[in-house]
Image 1: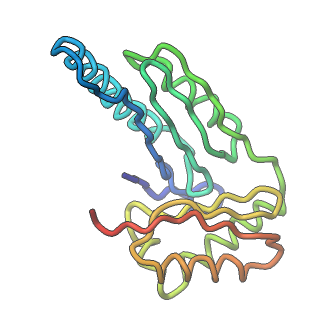
Image 2: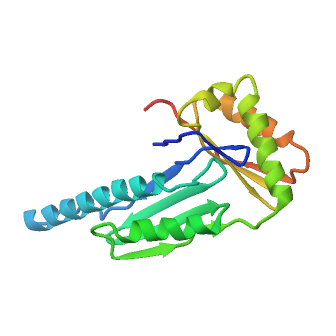
Length: 195
């Protein structure tokens, strides 16, 4: 479930509405009387509704780009925000956007703000160009929802998101490793088999 739109920002192509991964945890249903089972279903329904609203609020954040990765987990009335962002204001905006959702009792904002680094900025641009201009991966850059996110932290690159095939995942890894000044590449891309 990813949505992106293209936006130009100081010469960079940014994709607001980056990858969000929702982990909704529900209580396991056991052999219990009907009222308890209904209560469990109500709790799961509330968590599902809250998760959808959290996702909506996060994808609406300005300046959320292909260089950021946001994840969240909903457990009852508690929302835990995780991931990495380039701008500190995005961490604060994410926490503020989520805490006003009906049903959210607390927000644990564990989002990591990546260190400011001109070298990392250069690597981000180079990785973006290399990945999205590679012949086998160009179609992802043409989508309204570019699914490959490039997280750079002190020269170490992590690829997050979803691709269609193992070959695309492998290609992204090879291309990302070919960018100069990169110390390492961690490929966390998942394969979407359409199910």
